[in-house]
Image 1 (cartoon, rainbow, N blue to C red):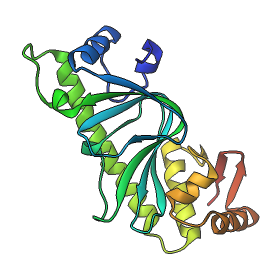
Image 2 (cartoon, helix red, strand yellow; image 1 turned 135 degrees about the horizontal axis):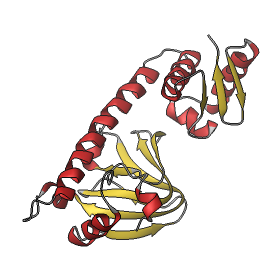
Image 3 (spheres, rainbow, N blue to C red; image 1 turned 30 degrees about the vertical axis):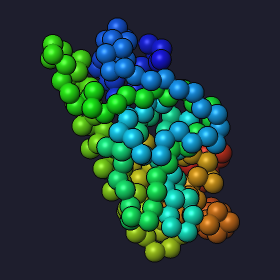
Length: 217
């Protein structure tokens, strides 16, 4: 289960006290599980909602040709589930894969939807948080579509960097994932992306040190 400090980072349990969180886990018959790196966590065949308590995972889409694309990185407090996913074409599949050893707690979605007999406030807050998560994920999908709709690797990179800079409130931002994952995120070959990134640095459009980037207009 989450510590009190880790609970503060969880969007699903935002505004819920630690004692109420413990009671929710008991009331909802939550199931904790641990996973090793590269192990499959979730294949979207069940109605359960998963909450990452420790470690890191990725939401991955696999198309008909077996090509994997990372849709979302999930750290502490990250939430996933069938109700929070936006499926692609019928030939695609979605998976949540463990990147670093993970502890995950699973809650059946029906427990979240079904109001308890006491109509307790913590349940109402949980439902509100779930609705906000769905809205946030819809917004994230819109941003992703904006990136993928660009025609060239250069345009995809700049669009992605502009979004991250806007989120940081300035021109400097920290890339939330590795460069390999960035290539998956913009759906392009890593080597081709690295060449384009080199050109952007040489032109002075982008400056970077490690995962910290500065975008120049």
